[in-house]
Image 1: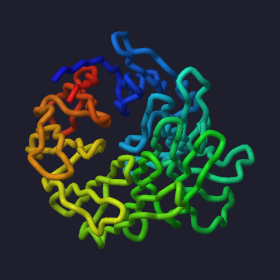
Image 2 (image 1 turned 45 degrees about the horizontal axis):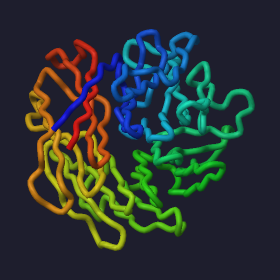
Image 3 (image 1 turned 90 degrees about the vertical axis):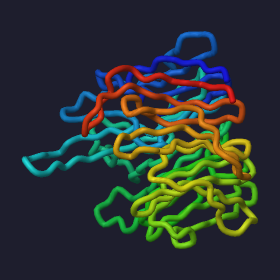
Image 4 (image 1 turned 120 degrees about the vertical axis):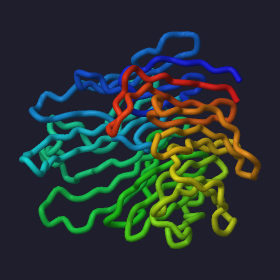
Length: 355
């Protein structure tokens, strides 16, 4: 297997494949948010920069979830968070955050698609904004962008909020109302399908056919006998892989439209990260929870033993997300100090490996 690496300073999200290149997001020490592209046989280049906030007690960065960053050969997208501490004392802290879905095509201006990037985290409804849009997840497929969020009116007595997934395709936008009073934990976009994990009265994973305008798969936490559905990955035939949590263990499973139920993939103390392409799933499995040792595995959906691509000892952890495009896998790792609160002790290394 051939592998290439690049150094990332302050890697917070990604890496994700952008055609033949790979892309990630960095949080600089001065508070700036940076989008970086690693081109083949070249040094990484800065694609876009969001300036640091200037308001007191305010920070800006990427949302720290796997669903907060994605890229393709045509476009990239991220969830950027502006947070302000409103007050704090010896035993409590109150803060306010405003999220934005930021996206752009390579070589074109970057825009805020939904939400806002205000000077303070408590200004989402400032300047006469009619609605508060709290962006929770983004996904990219080619030119298209999917945004999962909840939205509410900017008034005091505003009633229940609405959970939506919107797919932007050129000048058109298709919005699917997924419920009320919940949260879109993850979203994925591939081919004619968009999928999401929603946290409501009970967790659910849903696959929606954009061409037919209809739901083609829905599994709830009761259907799956689990307490929580964590994240998901989607391929262009509508097949979806997802991770689930119970009290003392996690499971990986997959499902497909037209096929009842879900098929088990793996069970263990903890799984982190998930990517799916070409009938294979890529994920990290924690093998020694107390020492935080882990391994990166590639497993076919149809069965068979997983293939180990990398190991992460106690003093080197995988960071950010991971990606899979059929012929390559991408991830990042970083040296860390031992201790109760793990701290980095050097820059991250972005790895792209041929399969």
